[in-house]
Length: 498
Ligand code: FAD
Ligand code: 2HG
Ligand code: ZN
Image (cartoon, rainbow, N blue to C red; front, top):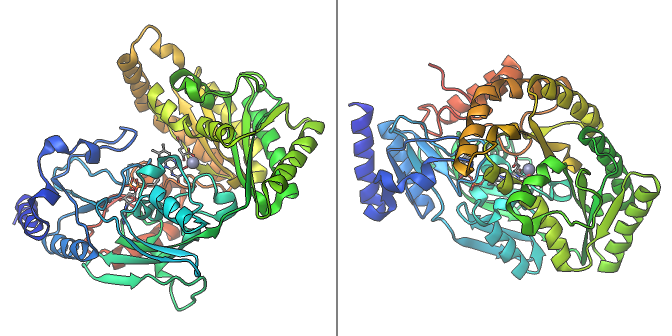
């Protein structure tokens, strides 16, 4: 039997199982599923299937395994590494979990919530809020990104500094294995040392080892007061500003300890597109000058808003006196705090509106950030004159999005479409070289080439380049043991051996 006829058998079985409406085979409807959020990767699936229960997922995987049909798990399709995009063979089937939206249990005393994998991050945040608690995992795509996707990418976001990433907030999971068995690991325990940590194997596996169908997530008490400030740094030179931001981070951590819940760095090149394409979310005109970088600080206090304000003001006083900060605004209302976050959260959207970039998601020891920024910036500008270095990110976690945008002059006189084509062509021609410079400098400082977005297809080969053969071999052995027929998201994370 050829793979194509195997796919046809699988699809007729899938239709019998789920009903015709839950199996999309009309290629005209593929667009939202076959391409990634950035429109960098374009796949051609055989179909998109939409199960709504764990049992349906298990049956689908069992059938796919029988027919050797490759499945590409997908949640909200907001991933930034191409992990949820099928290849161009026309044979892979997208297994989209967005119809699995049940809240399975709310446990106030244990401070946990148990959800289907297709529940969005925002829904969990809202449920937690109704329980008088908080679900602190937070990122801009919260309305679409799913808990299954968050766990599979081990997502980070803007509160990792205090609460950890998706892995740290996950107490238990339910998984459908590559053979279609269901592993019920939905334990809500904070401690559990009973052998190999299977949960943590599936978290961050980007759908290559199993399908996450449910999860128990940890909730936290709500802080009584949350205060936000936007500070601008004196240095017009972005690498120096990064050094200054690191110094500010040290002060903020000393003053606030665990109450520091957000510390986001933004260079002018990252904020300028927000002014251009989302002027309503631009940086406040009254704060510093347009060539200065900013830091968004958030402090959460268990006692009161006054206590949070006092803490934040102390940090800013010390910073202003020590010339770490040129100017700062402490949010005077929830609306103003939201405006500061809107600026930060629209960087990715504005960048996408500007055109394709070379995206980075690097992690470094905090102590190396300043020197890294200086060296990487110098090397990049020398090799690629005119590029715009749109550096921003979760500096408090040592995680920067050291993104590179094409030279602006390439779009002179062009309309939006022309600009997008010109920048796409530039990225295509130069991406490999740009990535090599940045990632060589990252790895030279014991950093990571992906802090929170994962490898997917984007960084798969680079991971193989930088990781030791021992590490890659161990990863291959795990993949072989858990997915012997290579039907789960093949060729992602690890290249399928030819
Ligand atoms: P998808 O994109 O659908 O899938 C991502 C990966 O997980 C794929 O490999 C897929 O195969 C796999 N997968 C999905 N669901 C399952 C499942 N149930 N079982 C097994 N495998 C599965 N990420 C951050 O970490 N921090 C940020 O601050 C951040 N900000 C973002 C801002 C914007 C504007 C956008 C568009 C994205 C941002 N992201 C960020 C990236 C993205 O939102 C996260 O990676 C998110 O966790 C992906 O969730 P998803 O449901 O969309 O997953
Ligand atoms: C963020 O921190 C996301 O906003 C997206 O991780 C980063 O656009 C990016 O490169
Ligand atoms: Zn990020």
